[in-house]
Image 1 (cartoon, rainbow, N blue to C red):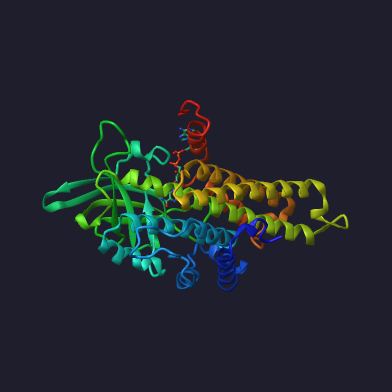
Image 2 (image 1 turned 120 degrees about the vertical axis):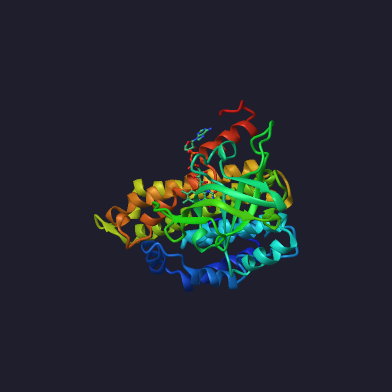
Length: 390
Ligand SMILES: Cc1cc2nc3c(=O)[nH]c(=O)nc-3n(C[C@H](O)[C@H](O)[C@H](O)COP(=O)(O)OP(=O)(O)OC[C@H]3O[C@@H](n4cnc5c(N)ncnc54)[C@H](O)[C@@H]3O)c2cc1C
């Protein structure tokens, strides 16, 4: 059953998928994934193996303004999410960093921040969400950078629910730098800030899932930055990030799809083995139909994801397809993990099996990087042409 729908892979993508599976089999078998989840531990050895295999940089290069091909990113993410899910979440963030730094980085930023990212030596975190707002973060953004004499900036504020700062060397931070009369998304600037800069405090948060990749609050208290820390254009940072956010939604779809597929595989495996009333539990129609519905949801989401990836790669409009793919894949992940838990009875509750972790991890992409409610608002307005609903 493994790999339904993956026949759409080109030869190069099939090779890539095989390479990721091989690394996962060697470095992150189920018992290792479980150990890292229980210990809230980032799997540095796995990350290094992915970096050494070129899977962080993929085809992105320091000298190019383009990040990696989205059709390759989604293959890597799906395969990771089906097993060591937290590592897929980590790579969603790294691919975003690669995209932003490739497109907007200065030569120095590319040399100092992008290059060590591409070969897996270092990691970045992307800090947008704030305590006062996630969905409407641009409107309520309180993190500010003010210009002082000598062309320097002082950064103050707080970010929350940020993935990966504990192990990152740099943060890509969005801060308000001016107030625009016409648009809340103008007047925001991106900065690349070293995590060890004086005035930065990082505190890990205790969360429900994705336990092998840290989620943190970050406080900026009078952090001094010079011009070289600005990423892209002053006051245009949010607009510059918007293109990357579409890519992030597509990548979130791939990660959610991987979770759904991993759960389906685990449920089918269990359904074949476990005997109840002298029959395999997967032979009962109730459970089997739930899994079939899950398989249909997975493959429908895959079709949307592939369309979105093709559109992104060709430079066509991809925001609606990416939004649809993310909603469909994350809904599939929730549905399949629920079906899996039901089929597995008490075993679903046990940490001996991967289902309870996948059930928890599946929740992330229903609201991150943007909530499915907000994406439905976007699709309603931009695809159906209905009046804005919010
Ligand atoms: C584990 C984890 C990792 C994360 N990683 C990062 C990261 O690396 N970087 C980063 O910047 N952020 C990150 N986030 C934050 C994430 O992007 C936000 O949680 C998400 O955008 C939602 O924001 P919120 O939590 O503030 O929810 P709110 O904005 O408070 O929304 C709450 C609810 O209200 C609904 N809602 C709000 N407005 C509307 C509307 N107009 N119409 C309909 N419904 C609406 C939402 O859909 C949601 O159901 C992460 C979060 C978690 C938990």
